[in-house]
Image (tube, rainbow over all chains, first blue to last red; front, side):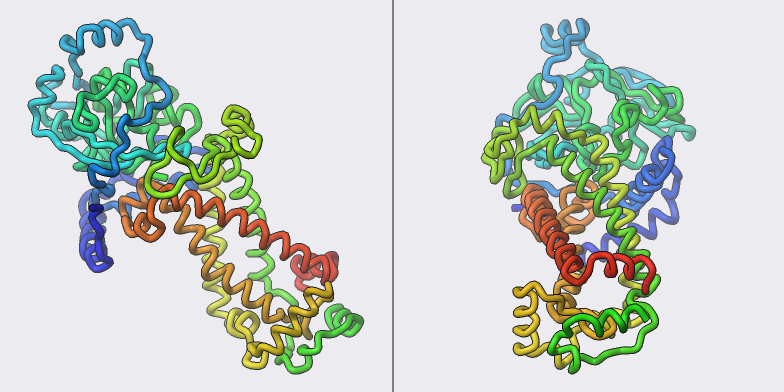
Length: 251
Length: 244
């Protein structure tokens, strides 16, 4: 059964959380995209993101559903099998030799194998994947919290502002530390109780449950922690915003 | 005064004499006029960008789940436009950018309008039907006028009961429902307010209702423009621009 949150509980959790955010986590990156577009569209971007972040300042969880709501097989969309030679080699080896580097502004840069990631405390969540096109499907995702992975690399340095994820199909996206810290922000290796299928992003895909599908990257290749998105791609914060989509995809 | 000569020159509604006529220098206040046209521009953008978003995924579903291949409540393909043809017409990137920008303009403009007119008693004085307007006989007489294609304008350009009622329902029931069904599709807003999902019974239901609401709103606009035309299009549009 979906958890229903009463109005009182919503008020009692969100109001103190809002105060907490205003006192502690009030950084620009939490409310404003890495590069604000010009004109009214840019103003609307800032309004949308800051409104969302104020409302979500308690890091509330996205709705979790029951197993009977799950779509199985889970629909696939866009890239389902990157042609990249390195990816094909890893796939043919069952991702045994695939390793995920965590580099940049972390205390101890390192890389992790799929087995090492699987040995981290897992989290399973039954959530809705919401495509910005309009479709949505519910899946049971199992993975390691992104925050936990970064802690495996000693945590971020004080200058860190964004986590950049690169994929085997050439996508790259930036995520601010508020998004990274969320309990449901996981790197999923399991879907509906089985290994993540290739069409859904094997060996590892990102789940950011409070943003649209295009921020939930598949076929993960590496993780970088940076202080600015200016030098990545065209500098807007990720491949989607480089192509003119919203950087913050909470709507 | 243009307004007086106008109302004298036209057949007056039988209920006009009983309706409480109020002295007013302008047919529409500054606030109403400015908000009306900003609202029109933002609604045109909302509609056009919404159509673009819809064309990129031209199917509707009920409940929490809906994807290509899942049982659909509505498929544009059943109405002669294939998925590929619709996709070629629609541009969701343009659509999403302009939809959410126009939504903020619409929301802020609407809030200014509502707060201003609550404060200035516009709603109470001009939009809340007076006691004598809330009778069955009055509404029946108005309906008869409408069906005979006769303008039911009251003295001083005040609104008829049906008009008042439809405006109030539009502003205080319909528009909030459109906003709620809109943000009930957002992964961010629904994480903050999961009640939105329960209110409508799921994200896909909200999307379907949002689309149905768009059609209802377009019907409202058609009737609204026909009413304006029946009452004298040029004069009515001029009064919404100049206030005279």
